[in-house]
Length: 99
Length: 99
Image 1 (tube, chains in turn yellow, blue):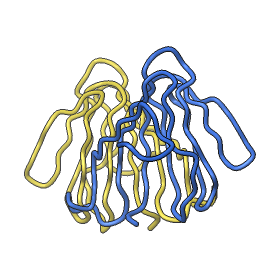
Image 2 (cartoon, rainbow over the protein chains, first blue to last red):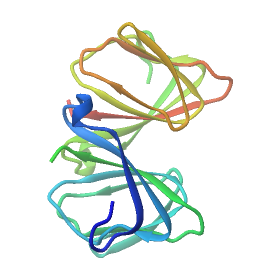
Image 3 (cartoon, one colour):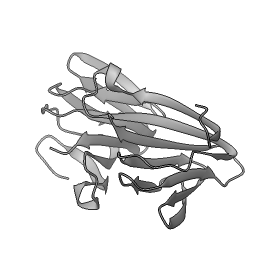
Image 4 (cartoon, each protein chain N blue to C red):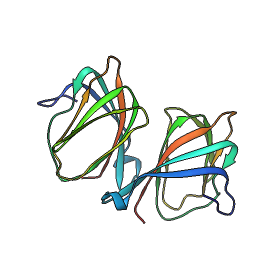
């Protein structure tokens, strides 16, 4: 994925509408050290589970760091960003409703 | 969770409707060695990601073994069961639409 404001990030769609999934999709994100997703918002939510590495999550006016086993919920319309603040690869699952 | 036909299994709801999630829920399943979920079906799907251990997944007439990093999609109305066929704890995420 290359979009404005994203750097060092790959997205793999693991389960999606084309597989017959009727409601939501499972994606795997991999961010290189210092990689980040765009700071943006949209009208669907994210359900995130961190698999490896250290993720700084910004969500509206909050910031927290999530490592393996941590869960983050990003509500619809929240302005959010994921940054790899560790020295190794960051991997997380990010699930979204079909939109 | 204790229901007929389940053994050695714990479910933790990580993100759910009460958290404001509008569409689907994230649950963490932990199965002891030889533990299993009930063999059953229902009209909603599962999106599964294996975190640790070895899972035998039955889905209608198919069976496969899934270890860490494997993904399984169980369609609505498929008869399915998850069995810990390893010697260590089995952990997987299982996401479902609100139902």
